[in-house]
View 1 (cartoon, one colour):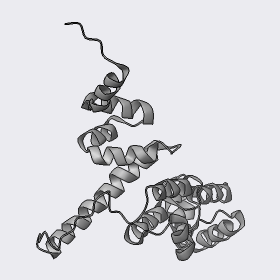
View 2 (cartoon, one colour):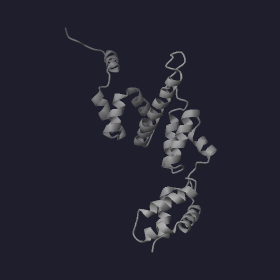
View 3 (tube, helix red, strand yellow):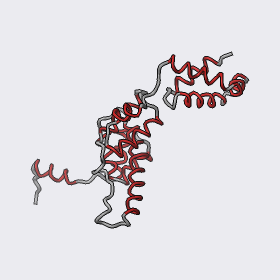
View 4 (spheres, helix red, strand yellow):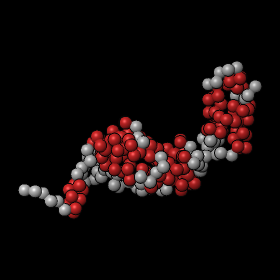
Amino acid sequence: MPLAPTDGWLAEVKSRVTELPLARKQRFMRDYQLPDGDAETFVNDVPLGNYFEGIAKQSKNPKAVANWVINNLRAIISYKNTILFAMFNGDPERYIPITLDNLKFKPAALLELVALVEAKTISSAAAQTVFAEMFETGKSPAAIVQEKGLAQVSDTGAIEKFCDEAIAANPAPVADYKSGKVAALNSLKGQVMKLSKGKANPALVGEILERKLKP
């Protein structure tokens, strides 16, 4: 018999159609500019992919969000659950696994964290500290940065002072750099970062050192 579906019936059928793995992977690569590996991860772990997509839709840099979700969030959930399982010997009445649904921080916190790094308010290293703290406490990234004094130093005058101190205290790498050993600059950068307690803007440190060490 002829079939004359109504619009409502078609809409209901479409709503029940599950996105196939290949289509999902291609969509993630197309819509969020993800590399093959990241997209594959979100295909294999559907809840993680859904969590990522909820944040990525609001982000100007979905790739950065994907990095935090895959390399940091997924890893720390797995690590914490392993510890909890061992602590409570797998007792289902005491062992409550950490999931994407019971995280202490809201998804928007990852957006805020990515924005702080992109604005160079904090360094990549400091961002790791901020992430660990917000995972444990649920505090906002901005609040953690302020409480722990993690804001990156981008004041040229302050960084120049650190650079001058590092140059004066490390004549050997200075001589090596001036003799053509470009890698020696990394040693001086490390000294500047140490003097600034990790807060100096690494890009500015490199620029200032190179300028000061020019023949």
